[in-house]
Image (cartoon, rainbow, N blue to C red):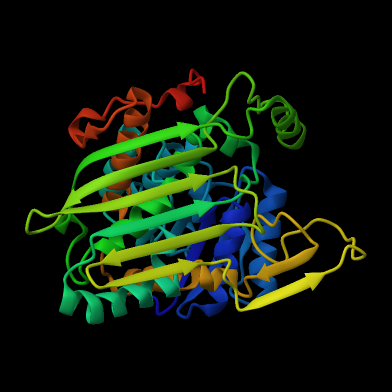
Length: 412
């Protein structure tokens, strides 16, 4: 096995570039390739890797060509949700033909748009017989990782396990048109971002060293709404920004979602996660917040509680940008700055972890099966929201469920 992991990216957009930048802090790996249906974008993403000196990357003409290339050892799937199965089929078809030397596949969240598709992705990776990882960056936020270690070592070991975790991701909306189209993305903000919140809360409530299955979901209550982007003036603005295919007056997706999941622990005691996600949050920019409560302790994380702040008076009138914080909403006033977003949001530790697992031949704990479990919880939340009631978590009844938002028939 190579001492360095040669990585090829499927997708060349925002999330791929976030990952590429994080590899400045990852040893043992090189970015060697990018494929995208847009060759120009692929060349630009490969050029970014070259400019950062983290690999001699090139743009490939097809997924099959990239998988078969001798310098590519692993694939990071970062393309749109509606292309997930198509991308996986191309990878697996090439592997099974005997071409290339792929040892691992890592897939961005969510694993798929619904349970049926997630099960197909799991089936495909098992056919390929390679290692696999589920890319959930917020599990690797340094504040979450260190907070969990200390909370369990000091608080839980003395006073008892935590019993409540709250997790939220909120910003003003995604970058690309397909995110806003329920049939392509698989839903709205619940599918796009609650996957983060579910896993962060579940991790924090799980004892270090224990499997995620040591806490068992038993019921879920959820609701969804379109609070901002379905208003006529904002629906018009959204269509102007994203194109006419994004029509929130006639085909809206939810821009707000909340869920409460009740688990039981090893002793049968209830523990709860409260989750909130929003594309209708207006603040400095992206806000990731986490809270854990136990019998005699608590923990809080807020990424906008930054150690760096800048103030610009109203005379400073420059172009809009994202140079202070992701999903930035302003350029004036007192603004927090997230100085190293790839570190603070978890991408650096995440990619270091999966690179090391693949190089060591170790199946990551966070894998496609984890992604399937998250998809089942997401679909249960959608079903609860549609039925407007608390429902039992029964994953075997979700195989054929597709949210109304994803079918284009949801009316807020």
